[in-house]
Length: 411
View 1 (cartoon, rainbow, N blue to C red):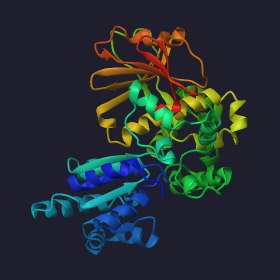
View 2 (view 1 turned 180 degrees about the vertical axis):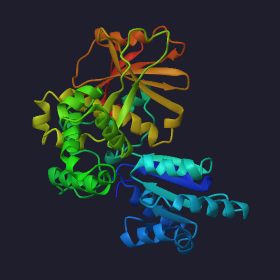
View 3 (view 1 turned 90 degrees about the vertical axis):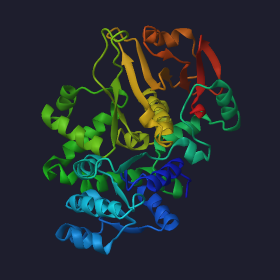
């Protein structure tokens, strides 16, 4: 089993909060880490994916909680929302008795339903952890820290952990779900075919009628081919053959299941005149995006128009993972910036009062003209830190004042 950076942060949260909520897409490893918590911290465990357990939780929530007392992990709790109100009373009583920490761990792959239940019942007593698929650092067994343009540290990191470009493309196509690395013989296409079928049956069926499932898959395929681009509802509606309201609803379903995520445009009056206001949409896993876009090998990717967008998606995802896995995402915000005359910055990290501009490229040689977009931030009220072009180069080199080209292994 691959060691997960976020596990230490989950344990820390469990030890300091009455209730810990773990969200994340299907098969990102939530249940595996819960098994470690069960073993190492002495928690009980019950999964509401089990039909009988789910039925018991729905029919008599109080009896169910009596049978599964704290400390306990309740997996897939959103399948029995009736539990939330009763759980609130149980947690309140335990806190009154002096048990203020390490009571329950709740997990779920439908973030909206899970957080809706928590916010309506136990807000203020909950530590929230969002799990992502594996990171490149986790797969390669490298220490993972929040991404910073710290040149000395990056030079040493890249020297000792070089990542071949072709290998990087292999990772993009294979994706980052743990099962693909626990079982190296598992073929990628069958895995994603099963993943998609399970996702549609277990998660999407609660929201979408059977007759619309194929159009929902069509939307996923269109979005996969548009990963890293602006989210335009009317164009998606025309492509899929449904109305705009339906597309908006389905996008909400994909966001709730952590299948996609949005990168919001940077908004600061002094630097955001005549800029695009729509968010960009990214698939949370490039392997699923490649499967939906019919990119089945690195050779296909290299010769596809999707090479740049998939590389950008992977780099943006890896940078965000480096913050989430260290529970530093609450202290950082992520944006992009694009003007109507097509000047842009792929990713802007705002952390500790400092802006870090990042370009994400599928190439090796870049010059100062390739970071012209960074000048868009010159009037910011925040400090402008060192910038970077993260790309498929194999070395660290300057591309301008306070800006460097960095290998992907720098993340």
